[in-house]
Every structure is written in C-alpha cells, then in structure tokens.
Length: 140
Ligand code: GDP
Image (cartoon, rainbow, N blue to C red; front, side):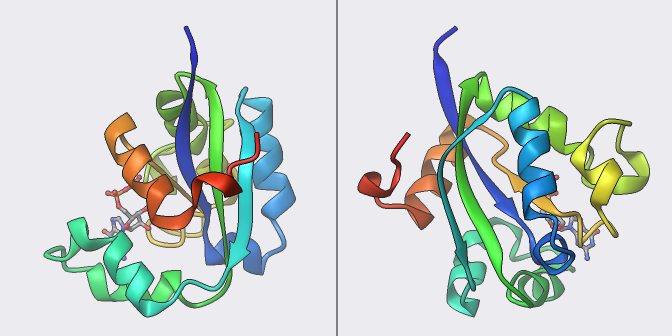
C-alpha cells in the first residue's frame, strides 16, 4: 500500500513534561515518519477553529483552554495507512481505556490532557494538515 499522511499534535501536557522526544519515538517506532514538524503556541482563534466540530460538546471551552495552556508540536506523519497506524499507537481517548504499548497509556494524564491528537480520517487529515502547514513546509 502507498504511503499516506496524517496530522498529529503533541499536546501541552506532553510538551510541559518534556515528552516531545519520547512521544515522537513511539510514533517513529510505529512506522510513521515525521515529514513536517513545528513547535507553536496555538492562539485561541486557532484552537477554536481546529476544534469547531466539538463546539456543541460540554467540554469545548475547557478543551480550548487546555490546548492554549502551553506550546504544542504540530506534525505531519507519513506511513503505510498513516491515519489508522497513528490512531492505533495513540490509544483510546481516555487513558483508562488505552491498551498497553500506546502513547496515551504510557503518558496521558486524563481524558482531556491525553498527550496527542491524531486525525480520524484521511479527509480530516488533509483539512488539518492544511490548517497548520503550507505545502512548502512539508519537506519529507
Ligand atoms: P480523540 O479523537 O481520541 O482525540 O477524541 P475526540 O475527538 O472524541 O475528542 C477530542 C479531544 O477532546 C480529546 O482528545 C480530549 O483532549 C478532549 N476530550 C474528549 N472527551 C472529553 C471529555 O469527556 N472531557 C474533556 N474535558 N475533554 C475531552
């Protein structure tokens, strides 16, 4: 199968605990290649826009506050079946439900502060990549 792309965020709980390298190693060990990466302080406008699909959910306000509470690392990942491969190594949203060997089992603090974001479909991956990256920033 040809390589595909997905979008990842190393969330503020993980950057705060200096886990950028540890999380990235788990992504790489899962067969994903970081083909673009930047550490940014997300603005409130960016967080609102990025999570717009969750606007009606009761935790939306808290989620936005959390995502702007410190720096994040946004990444484009490439690999065979990248979306599913990344979701598998991320683990369940709630770390209490996450399997052994997943990033969230290893590092997540809570259902909210769960260390990583990963696109849930190829369609959303493209939208999310375009939200944070210009094509010339994706260097391979
Ligand atoms: P994901 O695709 O596994 O990240 O999960 P969702 O798309 O359902 O939720 C997006 C993000 O919202 C999660 O990664 C969490 O950071 C946060 N989140 C999800 N469920 C809850 C919740 O019940 N409470 C709070 N505070 N945050 C949540």
